[in-house]
Length: 144
Image 1 (cartoon, helix red, strand yellow):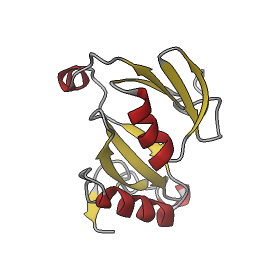
Image 2 (cartoon, rainbow, N blue to C red; image 1 turned 90 degrees about the vertical axis):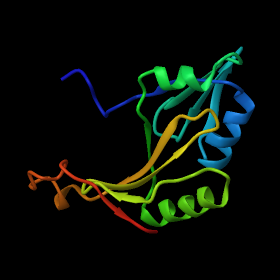
Image 3 (cartoon, one colour; image 1 turned 60 degrees about the vertical axis):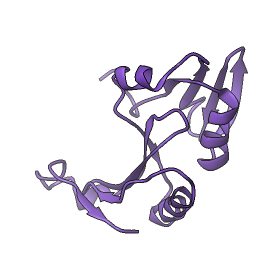
């Protein structure tokens, strides 16, 4: 198989690099590891970068909806950290979903400053779901 370790990185067009940096670095804790004119690169420390942001001041909300991206999922250390992030997002003027138990993971969804849907997720232990043929079939909402 050619793919190893899942998705390497995602590149997003954003309206304002500094505003988006406050979100991805300030709130989510990614570290800016590189830059070029109009573009910044961020890492959680696992790869050279998992996220690249390309500034496009003319981008609109319609552009985002037409782009085809459903959401970007970020791995969160554990459920305790996920709960802390949920509380931080809830205190902002940024609507969040209820908690979602996907059987394989637990998460919640929010939007970044440009309107992209972000999933913050923590995986459940593989032994809890790998032998269950229904593992990917349903989601259950829960409250943090």
